[in-house]
Length: 195
Image (tube, rainbow, N blue to C red; front, side, top):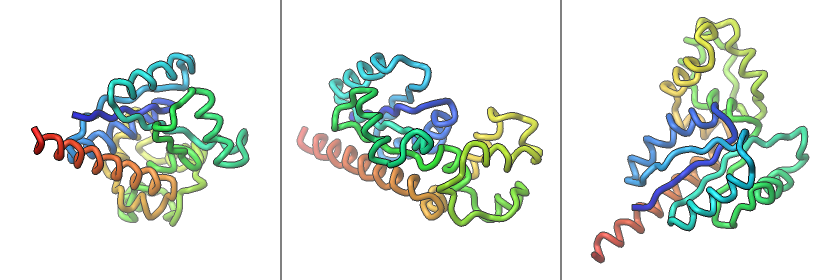
């Protein structure tokens, strides 16, 4: 059975993948082999882990923030990630525009926005930053529990279809992920019918 592994920058990215992607992998009968946080790990170790994962026949997805203060274009950011981690071209690389927190908010419906008293509903979350995200929640009852309780709370209310409408980088990621999962399932089905 084909496996898929995710390489992410930090804990918030890891929580998102665990809550949103892991169940999706189950739907497609693709083994989710976990997430690896890269921000505090030597890039050479990450590069080695990516190469070993691919050598073992698994699919790698790499998720990174745009980091628009340092990189003026998306192409510059993509190139920097490929070079930093010596990623092979078979690695699926998705850049989150602007930051992962924009995806958390993108998946909330009008109902949950109102229920959580987050103010006016944003039609797009493409430019939402971590600081804006923190500001949205600092006055809500959820702020008292900290990020450890806030993020899962939001993800239990997360709707990927709404998120696709409100955030272009999530839409790109979700379509790319679904395409990969369909391909893996179809290849596995073809192999099991031959055997």
